[in-house]
Image 1 (cartoon, rainbow, N blue to C red):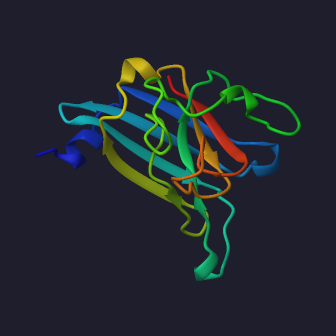
Image 2 (image 1 turned 90 degrees about the horizontal axis):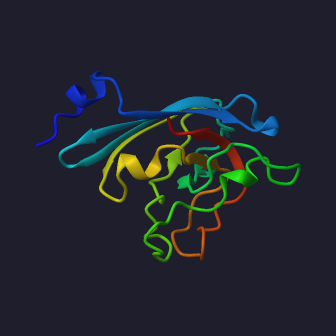
Length: 156
């Protein structure tokens, strides 16, 4: 059995500092990656997410690892250089190694902790973490129709 509090209390094996695009400057946070004998424990703490007061339309955000190594882009896609979902095994969506559980808004904050064996740390160092404006539908090819990239961080 994995002792989650013990794992989270140690220094992560890798992390990505998350920053929002020019349109979403309030978004910031950190995604930490911990090696365990059961896989990678991922811990995300994000703040400044666009929020709604209506409980029935509270945002859900797509959350993915992308293949690119930069959080840069252009006017129409501020994180275009993050490229597409991390998918070293050429799986169909939602079986990409970079497909992660969505982030659920809680008054602008989101916290997520999950265990995955879809990737290894060596394969993701230097890759990017992206937060999308819409939830991943886990169906649409190739990327789940998750909308605009609103925040990004490089895994180091």
